[in-house]
Length: 250
Image 1: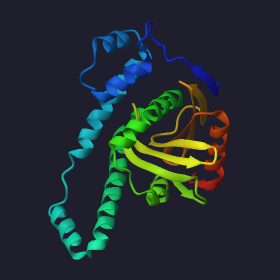
Image 2: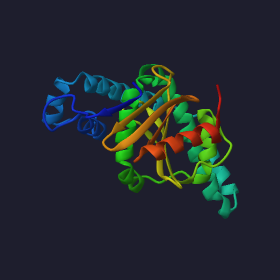
Image 3: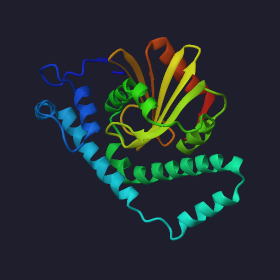
Image 4: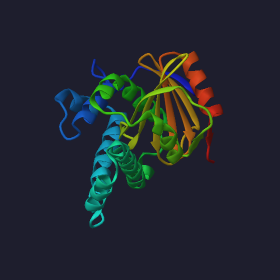
């Protein structure tokens, strides 16, 4: 079934799956008694918790790789040699390169473990989009002009702009490892786009409604993209744009 309304009430009571996921992500090692009670009776959240714990371990392993000797000195020397008006650009380029490398490192650790349930991914995308306002306030965006490079590293070549990009950030996608979170405006409204590395499995396309948000998960590039809007016509238009304005590597 490609269209399905989710109540997210896998266990009885007012505490629901999205509540558990947000709490688990906020502090994976400490959860409340309400979360523990919900977890005991919810197989879906038990699987989610296992993925989060594996992701935490994988990120720790990826970040524990020692840097090449003298790398810090070479970076500082290069920045001192640049004119003042180029230093900001140099730092942005270095930061983007670092996130691309981290994408690859984390994907190698967890791609085989997270790569598949598109329904779970749709729920995670909805949860992520629901917290978008707070995330945008908390994190500095990558320069919007880098969207094409981010998309290219994921396996897509942009042929035409998708919209006015206002936020790009590399962050954990609830239970599915690290991915790119992009927010952009279109004539039909705001669109949230998530790019999640991982192996292809499950249905090629999944469309669901979660807490008033329309979500479509689609296989593409190095894993999946997820589109989130607040109305179905906007979602259909955003997905058409992704299909016609981006050329995906097979």
